[in-house]
Image (cartoon, rainbow over all chains, first blue to last red; front, side, top):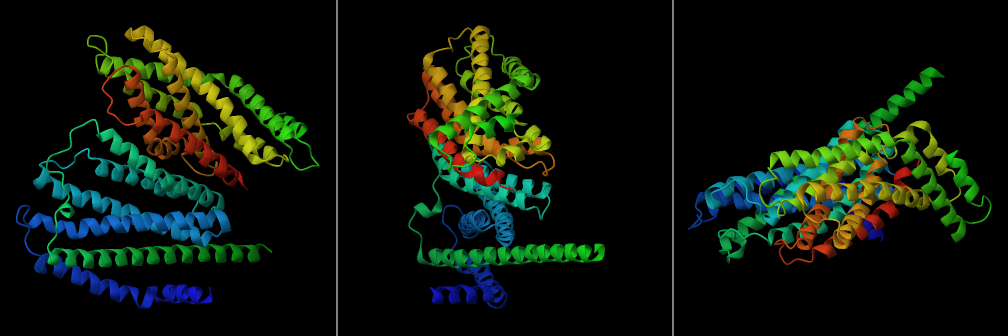
Length: 242
Length: 239
């Protein structure tokens, strides 16, 4: 237990020392790998290289929403507003990566499928995800930042939304059974990937997940500093009144 | 007045007993039904909105000339969804503003009872609007919609809808633009309800509907939303 706590503490401290350089190196490796090392895909051509951003961004998106879920449970359980800062940070990063997934998917879909958007189950549920957590951010921006009740309400919404994701995915997949699947709808992952492509994809996952974690840490620290500043300001006001 | 009823129904000293809990739920239910009756103007507004929505669809998609049945499930469920947003938008607003909610929260009863009473009251009211819309569509489009099957689907949908939307309705009054926010937050969450409802209604009308178990989707979603809301409601209203 103590070892785990020490490990967690070390990881938390490393967010400023280890995370930024690691992220930088990994992102550089991703760019070099995706543009130079990975072979040109025979059928899809250069546009296939988006795959090395698209898939890692999707993974980072789910990790970010997972952090939102856990942090929201902590808000409800421990009434800790610092966890609320983490939840808000993770949600904004999650929404960013959801938008990135949808954008890269559309850019890839235009030449490959011939359309920007297909009402495919996976695309549609990702769009619903964007709307769900976009709504969360909208609600947060309309409420007072340091309002504990607004934080609790947002945490409840985040928990419900996260638990709703499997039901949404299932219902959207069933909804699509009525329609014929697009013939070209095969993710490149369905084919056996050459080793070089797989290696670049692995680097991409590491790089993008590190980037997401770093962004969450940056945002969360900023939010927590803002909370402390607000608390200090309130304390100064109280002292001046007295 | 209303908080008083709840206080009287519960025993102030002992642990909340089953009888007291039921009594408190009934007191909350009676209070909410009375409130709904006094605020009938806003329910009339929701019903009028639903009627207008059906008419708008009729004009927009020319539902008069062709066989309307393929479009009817979608028209009906979108109408239910939007009418519900209008109807439930202020479910907690008046009580929050007038302090009734705070008075209710000090009653020595489990907070889930406050939720259960309100849930039943709003379920009845929304179901009344939905059934009225089914009757209206039956007359307007000459399709038999008041069947037991469709009534059951509508009741299931209304239950799932009200339970989740009521939880979101606790959104504190300190959030600006609450009326706009409620549909923005609720509608993506309710996507499975819409899909399941439309397809199950299509199945009931003998339309092509795919082979997924739509009724079960509706049932699972309704139970899930009721359970999640009942569990989270006490946290949502905590001060």
